[in-house]
Amino acid sequence: MDLLAEFPIVIHQPVIWNDMDAYQHVNNTVYFRYFEDARMAYFEKTRVSEFKELHGIGPILASTRCDFRAPLTYPDNLRIGARVVEIAEKKFVMQYRVVSEKLNAVAAEGEGLIVYYDYQNARSCKIPAEILSAMQAIAE
Image 1 (cartoon, helix red, strand yellow):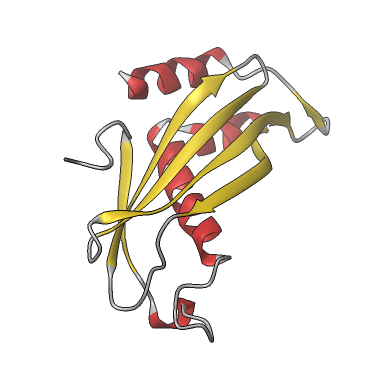
Image 2: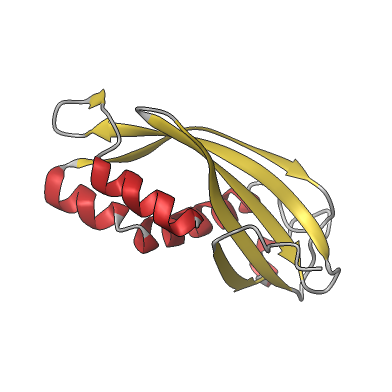
C-alpha cells in the first residue's frame, strides 16, 4: 500500500547526519523543514511563488503542527507528501506526511494553516482565482 497515494506532491529527501540530535534521532524541529520543502514544491507546481513575484500577493504560514509517529535516524530516505485538504476565501489548510523508506512507515504527519496575504498592503486577501484553479487541478 502506498502511504502517499492521496498526496499529489511527493518529494524525496535523505536524512542528513547533521539533523540528528543528542538523543540519536532526527531533531523535532527538522520535521518542520521537511514540511516546508514539500509546501514549496506544491507552491512551485501551482505557480504560487511566480504569482507572488508578479502581483505581491501570496501565502503566509499562520500556524503549523506536527504529530510524530516514529523516530527517524540516519541513514534513511524519506518521501514527503503535501496536499490541500480545506480551502476558504482567504486561507487553506495543507496536510503533510513524512514516510521513512527504512521503516516503511509514516514517521510524522502535520498541518499548516496558510493565509493569503497582500504583502504591499500588509493584510490578508482573497485567494486569487488563478491560484484556486491551479489548486483544484492538482487535487484531481
